[in-house]
Image 1: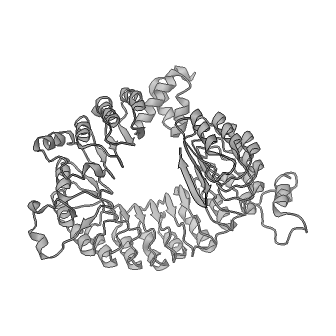
Image 2 (image 1 turned 45 degrees about the horizontal axis):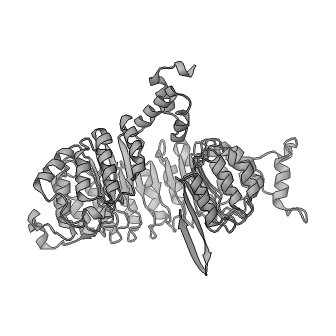
Length: 621
């Protein structure tokens, strides 16, 4: 029946599937193949293409499908790379809208030739492409610069992050070729500051050949103030007076600003920014270590349209700074990870005291907030409501089963849950059972008692008495790394999440083959799995589990010391989509066995290391 559906309808139906499911659906029939390709194109998927002669047929095929978003990896100045760039320009160039060359080393000539073949580009990523700027001669010829400007007329986004050789002159040449630029990243470029009286008298003729100066950037911002809406100046060492000069540029109405790791910024500078740029919708102040509660209060009261706020690693931030967060009625994501003095109490109160609906938070990270306690989280979770999709409580080491059960009760639409290193979580919490108040009988093990209770459904007194992970059927990612009290008794019962794509059970010393097989049957859609330091897993367990994971792409088995090359053979036969495999510190797996495995699946990246002569030798094959 599905074969008779119009192509447009099939395309629409497949567009609701995750990317991996769309790939699987494309194998059903020719009609489904074409529908899946249309769906992939409509979702603007980025295709990562390794630069080698073997990729030439793929590039031609992608060109026939009209793919518009690609990333080129392993790019260098070799003849093979030059040939690949020519192929990209010919087959993909006319309709290419997004191009990433991040970390590559193309020659200036091959880069220019590629750009001239891509007249529809809207996004260009040159982060880490230091070879292009080392000579300082990129686009030095006026004729070449004019041709490139014609090709980049539609460019809206330019990423120049991490360019150690970027100087005023090369920046001016490149930016002048992109008259429609709206988004610019100079993250982790080395900015020099001359903010004295002479700054005002500096013009384009003072552009430096050797360094990137703030006065030159400020001149660029003034020229483009009417269009520029996004700036990323993370890691540039931006000074308070420099931020103030940027904020007060006439006509500048920034929507997104990233100042991550600008450690010299002061609370006063952020308060001034909030007055100067009240239209900001995204602000990243992570690792701005001088900021205090007053900075967060200024943000909460001054940026009423803020949707994304990152405050990671603000060590001086306390609960007092959270009291006005309820003013951010449009806030969608909040990152307060590693704010060690934040207990969550005032955050819960601020969000709970909002008249009407609370902010539509979809993402919340409180990872590594060591002051976070059950009481504050239990107050916070009901306030978050059904909008929350991502919750990260990693390394909140005092949280217990009460928090987990509250999550399972109120946040049933979560797609990502990270509880790594929450060491107080135990089997009782995952199973929704009441934790016993008295010691088990002498000689009885707690996990044995749990297995007995969980497998005795006919006795009403042993039924689950609270919510379990089974209620989170929308989960796509779950991280239980180092929740060391968890055993097969709970994992086998609750890890029945058919939509789960990513799972970490690393550092669970009690996980055995029995639990592995149960997880494999309960979570058949896994694409990423981490099981490092699970020392009880054996070849026999993998022999039973591997066939349940045909979609597995990334697997970490490091320090699983019972595994041998037999497990490699099993994985090679059952997991044909595997891309990366980490078997480092597995004494039963030799380098020769890894090489044989990779001969079977040549596209797989294998990591294998061992101690040799007292040193740790790591090979990536």
